[in-house]
Length: 273
Image 1 (cartoon, rainbow, N blue to C red):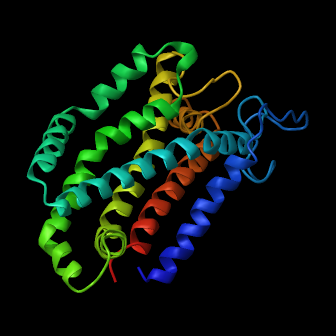
Image 2: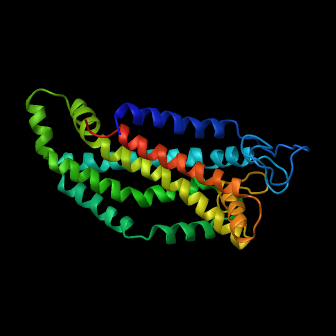
């Protein structure tokens, strides 16, 4: 994908999600004229649910639920990946061994099991996607740190830094520009973008499981807001129970696809020249 096209896709996909999140209503939009399961042709742009409520609210509230936690998780993984690469360039065997040991311990933990345990043990009033997103980011960080350290190792590690120091460059320029901006950027940005997408998928999966089991949501207050998982659940009923809600399934899959396009385009825009 050409870099200009990737940047364009990034701006469009992230722009759509952020606009939806910013304009998400706190409560349902009451529309007395809406028919149950109204199609997008009857109630543009996305149709209505079984109670005649517009699916636009589902799309906006779901974007509001996932946007900030997903971005925070992506930035956290990106930052920790940079730390892993810079540690390799420091030339300190003691610090690198300690960091490598922590990566091994955290990386060996099964992510989904840890997430489910945290979600179940978290008090109901404290449940939010932000806490789960941070835990997911910490569990995903060892992979980003390992890959960034491998890239820094291929550069030469501390020898690369000393060689540039011999040419008169400052340490700030070496670490931030030559190491991070020129060499670690493609790796850490891709890892952060993948984490952003994974947090969105995680929220949809956990909310779908809660809906199917009739349990309270792990990620949001379902009494006032609805997740994208509600769209997929209604769409699933159109397949399993012959309910006319296929447009909800299409909308849910489209929103998930926009998130995936955003992650891929971010990675492509940040790739090495």
